[in-house]
Image 1 (cartoon, rainbow, N blue to C red):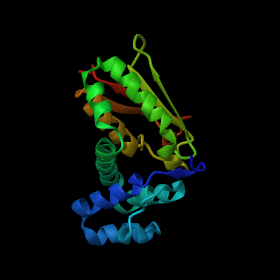
Image 2 (cartoon, helix red, strand yellow; image 1 turned 90 degrees about the vertical axis):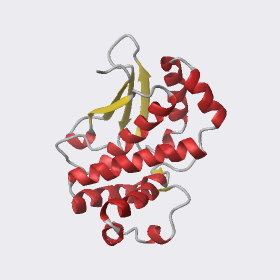
Image 3 (cartoon, rainbow, N blue to C red; image 1 turned 60 degrees about the vertical axis):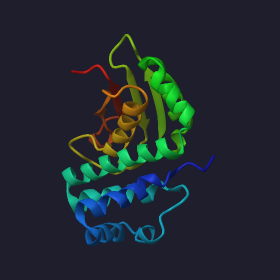
Length: 202
């Protein structure tokens, strides 16, 4: 297991895929240059990266594009990250099994897998998950000490990248109606970033 403070390269490479489509190659190059990561446009990272690099990139997205566009980019990158995991990291037999299990059981199995690999996306933060089937939302995920929220202050929850990744995985593997709502965020001054996943809303 790598040392704390490192995150999987998807948090950078998927942003690099999304940005040119939304804002063009020139702005993409400017964003990565401002973040000190221009080299990753030439040679995408293939291994775990320093979490401070991810934080800088996502911070520059907000500075350069504004909150609304940065959130859209982060969500699109999160969805692509989930698609990458489905294509390359989660075995097809496991996926087929999850899709036929009852949603609560599939969620428990998926959460166990996410928990085992939390070090690849939470970095120095601490990830936890619980299923409260009879009390409140079905699934609650938390990241305490979220590296992407360090030194960030926002009026609204800012973890769209994580929320979109979780939502895509749950929609494909647990229940197509799954929705992820970030109800607390360290960037807003909360003690942890907390995500509620529900497939029964509405």
